[in-house]
Length: 84
Image (tube, rainbow, N blue to C red; front, side):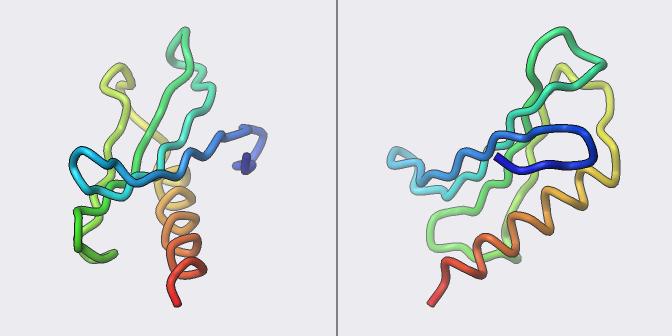
């Protein structure tokens, strides 16, 4: 769990065994939707940070640029810490 401003964000970090992708999912409460929202950073199999993609919950109309920056920075730092 990490905090962004007043928002608690659950981080789910996994390798997708079916596609070989590395996935960091972020689940949080978004005021614009009646349910929990999510975003994900996806890195292709055998890929690196330069090939990462951001996926955003399709039910959201928009997402804060500051939240996007936070998620990208958090993901990049986490992945750097895990690399030898």
